[in-house]
Length: 132
Image (cartoon, rainbow, N blue to C red; front, side, top):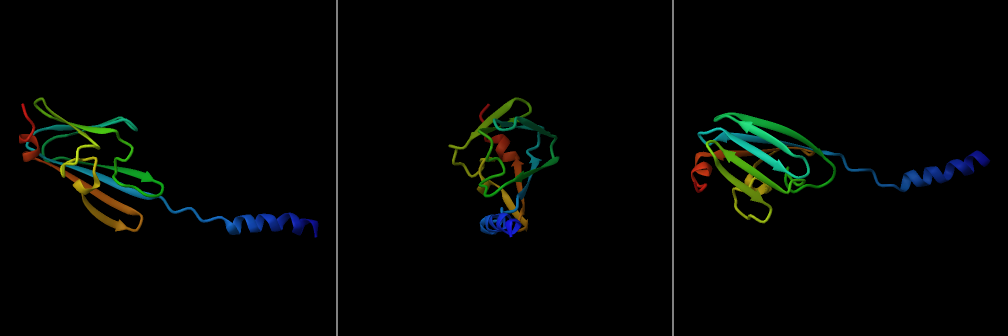
């Protein structure tokens, strides 16, 4: 009887806890169609640089818990350096449709309920629009 009294509170405790939602896998694919080599620099959170030759692509996988807004929710800003020497810095406050921090700037493919592919293509127009 004593064992049952010890066991019963544990059963009640575990029966009343909510199950944790499954993690979400985000794949972020950068495609370079700018006509020149470029580097994408992720600032704050994780500092990482992805360098792509023209017509090259790179995919990164990110595992997250719970909800998300963008594959780069943990970044403060993203810098893009087009060779030779043209640079642009994207921040969250930049409301442009071509801001790689914002989910609406990506082509998003739902692979399944917990797996999404975000694809961002750098174009020749992106390169040409940056002032010298």
